[in-house]
Image (tube, rainbow, N blue to C red):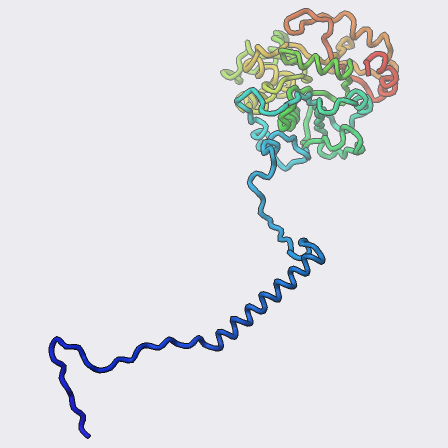
Length: 385
């Protein structure tokens, strides 16, 4: 049969019946998966609740440790700046060390409780034969002092862990008397001591030095001083200006040339002045060679030019030059007596903070190793410790 095509009239809708859309049925497979997942969740929850009740939450939930640290790990982040180095045997060379030690704060008031300390710096070839006397002198004064030792690089120190000298050797190099390497060693000691921000006063000593008073007397004497004790004399003789080299001008002229003792006591400001110097160091290194003996002239001259108003122009170390020669007298076992120390203490005349004083020397040298036993015997009565 042939079908008919009935045209639609313009403006009229088609009269063909339309079937309403039927919603699709939820797939049975998805329903089964959902029910299975729900059953597993319920089972896991039941097992977890039982485990927590039986064993506790710490065993039920694994602890995850993270390597991330909070930015404010310490209550006082400043501790990393003010804490002294735990190990003196660092890997810095001299250039790096002097640069690091030259850091200086511009604000004078410290934002923490700072107890000023004395840095005792020993410049020695090897052992410290008078160490037991120093141990007795320092006993009971922890937190008020620091110790630094510069010896020959090949020297193997064997101080027991209980000793105040244990672990106090700094990285060293060979130093020769009268040469610039001796000043290098002294600058090395100062630079290492400056790394401890609590060190306020710096005393250079040899292995033959002894304290002439107890610790409390020396500590208060130094802490109250307005000046640093370094000899700085305008010596016009052959051992003073006679060693001056005109090639050192214009940085150093002959009227600024000074002579003084190698052994000194200076404050923190002058210690930084010494380690940061490059101008005068070059002149002395090139033009002050034996028989100029740079260790007697470099620091006294440079500090006189830089900060003469801070110098006491005398040393705190007593020596005896009465026997003549290039070196002061050395005292052994037979020299140690009450009369010997009476001669040291009596008849002294100097100034302290611009006032007359009869207490001029805090340390003495040179004492031989044989003097140790009589010194230990006499120290409670004579030295006060």
